[in-house]
Amino acid sequence: QVSLVESGGGLVQAGGSLRLSCAASGRTFSMYTMGWFRQAPGKEREFVAAINGFVMSTSYADSVKGRFTISIDNAKNTLYLQMNSLKPEDTAVYYCASSTTLVLPTTPAAYNYWGHGTQVTVSS
Image (cartoon, rainbow, N blue to C red; front, side, top):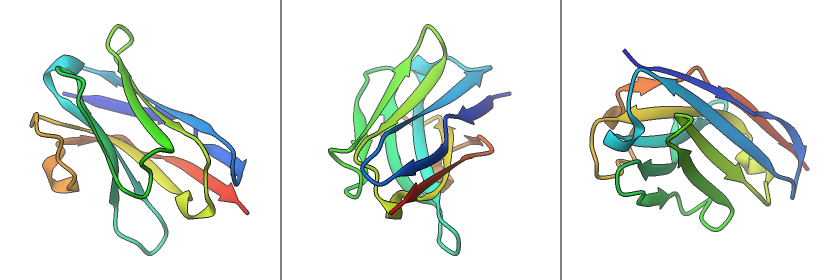
């Protein structure tokens, strides 16, 4: 069984930064891909970033490339998403998820476990 708990969301002005955390239990990070997704009201859940905990390869959505950074602290079993230069369109509930595939999937269906999400609101 895998448990994922996100934290670090909040309200920030455009141009500001936030760091999201995802604490995991019940799984070894180095054996799986971890990802961040987000879902805005009335929209589908969309891929943000993913990282392979074994080889530390990463993948990003074009909309966040150069602004967001995904990372893992294996010793703490914690996944992070550093978000800089935030824009109002980044406003959404952010979810972390884990996948048993090693090829950095970008579709929600490829992920097996999900956290409950943390709200990020960026004001203009």
